[in-house]
Amino acid sequence: MKLEGFSNRAAFVTGAAGGIGLALVAALHAAGARVFATDIPEALDGLPERDSSNEAVHWHGLDVSDPLAVADCVALAEETVGPLSLAVHAAGILSTTSVLDLTPAEWERVMSVNAGGCFNVLQALGRVMLPRGKGSIVVVGSNAAGVPRQNMAAYAASKAAIAMLTRCVGLELAGHGIRCNILAPGSTLTPMQTGMWADESGAAKVIAGDPSSYRTGIPLGKLAAPEDIAAAAMFLLSDQAGQITMTDLYVDGGATLRA
Image: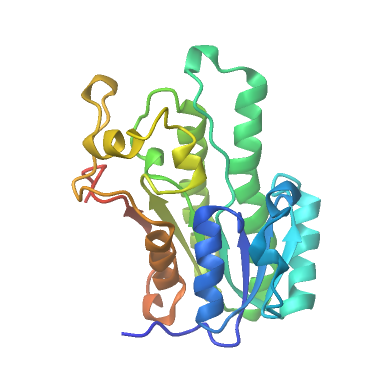
């Protein structure tokens, strides 16, 4: 089955320089969409994909924690690639600090980018999509939103906030023909994941799990590739998912043992 609903449509992507974000930009472009790809400027510096002559993908710096910058960027995207009807919010940051060591500044940093950034992006996109009565938005969360993790309280809390926020926005926009869904990846082979590994055995340890930290392994016996997560997002964006909104799709190889 070929997914439909992408050809000649305009798409907006945040966190586009990350592993999942890059895979999404490539998938959207391959499906025929015009893509406005954003990330913080330092993440875009030296990005090979940004230097390509591909006129269907436009790159732009964006800090999603800045509401005015997000609104301006969405407006620029509409001027550049056309009326937005597809969007993936994949921007986010990690924090691996113990609750008792977590400073107010670190809590605010994570919440500002993850939860605050999601609010800013959803609000700006909703405002431009609502008058046209058409749109599909996917927010990339995390399976940590539904499963307690040691030394990840700020990150997990921010992702839980994102999940409920997206569902609430989806409820408000459903009557206007706009679908909002959450994608909850598990351990995925990205720089964010590998940055937590102490040595080359990191992947094996994640797959096996760690009972001492109350963390299950991955029943499928493998880490996700960024393309796995992108493929799930593409389905939720597509016309084939036209009756799906406010869902929270876990793509984690069964790690959360969740139905």
